[in-house]
Length: 316
Ligand SMILES: [Zn+2]
Image (tube, rainbow, N blue to C red; front, side, top):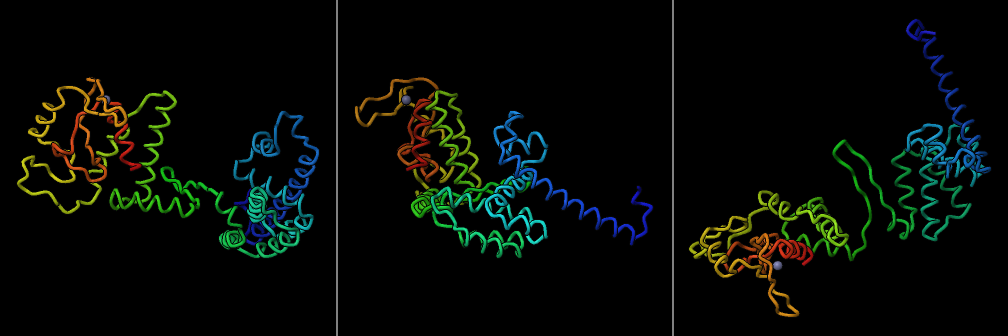
């Protein structure tokens, strides 16, 4: 059988037959899978779930597995579904979307009734994937929406992340945006993750990787220049919104610090004794929040206290 030798009409006719065979085979597979699921037959092959069986033993991709397993679950829950898939009225992908929706609602304690489920299947059967998404979204309970999270790979280097946040989180986001200037959501998210990573690693005693100062540096060029409120002839000659610290300012701060960390514990009023890896730290106003490189807004701190200050600056 070489399709290249077929006439057009022959080719189209054979394609139609192959398509029908594929659909029949899929339905046959689903019917078998229902039995495998009911009997938990997959357990004899050391699989802990139907999903694992379809993915690992039958060799389907994760997405294909998810479609098949979800369809099986919907067919088991709603007997009418089998006829709809058989007739082609309901695609496996739509069945899978509906099943995911039902599971999510059940998980948050808002199970969908049988009548509602049937109605939902009727509605979605005639819709495109995008329309089904909209339908399911409009029928989702607030509880289910609040817990729904989705990641979608858009390209090799980009992933779309979708989740809903409560008003309180949104307010925090607005506050951060106002404080650090007109940063984009993805920049804020990235910076917040840096802080969380550094904190978590430190808490777990892992290498305290210094991603923070680098992140601040990277932002230098991208943030918009605020209007300069310092006097042009200020003795420090410090440029606004720049990490550059003039030599004269450095000298002044070095003399004041006497080669020792200038961090002072607010509760005990004791000064840190560390002389190790001293760095310039924008204080009291962190650089990320618009703090300038002046003698009054700079101090020398050890590595640990510099990290600590950088973190606090962002959650200020
Ligand atoms: Zn210190």
